[in-house]
Amino acid sequence: MPPKKREYTPEHARGGVKAGLPTIETWPNQYRGYEITITIPEYTSICPRTGLPDFGTITIQYLPDKQCLELKSLKYYILGYRNLGIFYENAVNRILDDAARACRPKWMLVRGAFTTRGGMRATVEARYPRKRR
Image (cartoon, rainbow, N blue to C red):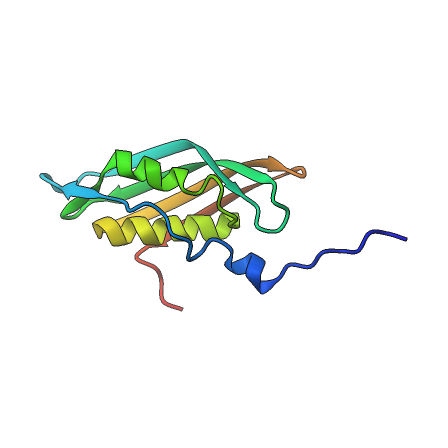
């Protein structure tokens, strides 16, 4: 008899979305009209369904307004995902929400390029401000 198929549950889908993470700090921007790109090549988290590790590169691009993201606090924030059960899609969207809330940029793009698993590679992008449905 084949093994019982494990279904995805609403708990899997919500996994990590509201978990406590370190605060992203900011500092006052002194200039206008320039873009910042931050690349974080060592992102890790845990799949909430399988418990297996996920790896990827997170890229945050933004046009700052009055505040810029402070990199050390951003590093600790991203490290907070290391043992967190969260899907790729949720992680990218949560990072966008938290980073945009912290610095209120003119615009922001968060891209997660995740390593190959099961013969497939996924890239997830989320943008601020969000388009209305």
